Length: 111
Length: 520
Image (cartoon, rainbow over all chains, first blue to last red; front, side):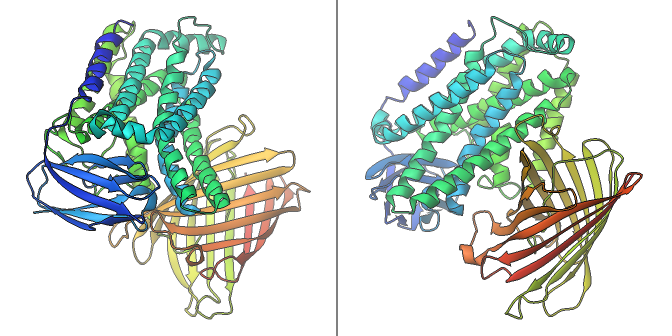
């Protein structure tokens, strides 16, 4: 019982912290429409933290996922989501929509 | 339908692994059945609520609601698992002693069973909400709801089977080591979840990456592969972890491990912990290597999860293909084998394989080493479980390794058997990717010398690269089995099947013959 509380407090702190506004970064937008990603290739600067805005204009939810970026996030239909990535090494990073893998594919190129 | 099944399977897998491990770890604690079903129900209800509120959650906390909710769910699960382990370090030995001497559960009033229920609810909640959203998307996209339902059910069943395999596999561990093994596994699961929680907070921009990625092992085991998912569930594997994830993994491991040692009445010896950790790592590594690729032909034998000690076997089986098209007509494969049941749960068999491609001549194709493990006693649980491992040393091209869980259910005179093959190429010249294949049979025990059956075999192809149904191989058809006793423990077994190709990729007809001579 006693053990739980300090850890629980730490967790609570993390949850409260989450309510604080995220700081401003350079924002790049990816649009999901018709179960496709656009742009299919997005160029971003290497070595910088980047704010990715994923705008799902489809009525159905999609999971934005990337193994090479180590990110996954569900985006409900007709809504936007923010994902922080980087700083990235120069290179190509594939991403896809987990719920429509056949069509929703794209990549981020860090230069 | 297959695409739906695969996505659902991937999501269900982690929850199934956690349920299997936690359920085994709470062996001997009363009311665990109630807690498990309660946990699953509560988790499912929560999953539907989270899915329905996905929009609201996503907008909360400046658009980072989803990450924070996930991190909180994961964090809570880590606490519960850690607490369980610490509690067990005090009481585990006592429970094991009691189970050995009395042979049944202890009535331990203070046992935190609710904790187990909560962990299961959290695991189901996290994975379940994604499944609900995915299926909603499929349904809203205008897909056939019957296909969607079948795919979802198949994915769920496959996931549940993996969980059951983990559970029954763990029950096979001797009681002396049992709680040490489950404790170490729970410790690794908890550390893995802590690393995922850190990943979520990193994604939300709330934690610094401390190096991202710290290393990259995706060429060894990719995150998206089934083996990657299994390893993630079992030991918290990530192909490209950020520094902060590795840090939280290590801190959780040392934190819970340290408290177990500090508080535990009888601390586990470092030696037993080291041995168990090595064991878990070895099993995980075996899984990673063996679950992964190719196979030229779908299986044409259905294995039963049954082994008899001291039984010797000489076996032949082969098939011949018929087709209107010359490119598929006249293909053959012939296997000759000798095998022996070394213990009452392990049967080992060596094969020599001859093959003939359509239009080509006969040639020796491969040697194969097969091991069949009977995991549960026949009739002890609601179904019988087994595991088949294969190593194929091919004469040309890369070698092949396969792992196939076996499940068999008997109801009165009906016996249903399913083998799920996961195949991967190894060595030089290998192709990447895990190939999935299956063998299934429904048999009616009419008379020992004549048992009619329906069989199905197929190979949908590589995970994530399954072509349309017509490009896959599937056969279905009637079969018959029989056994003639020759006295003094000798017997002759026969079976044959006439299969019909279901797709344009499969031959129109495949005639199969199998013969076995058994002696002791």
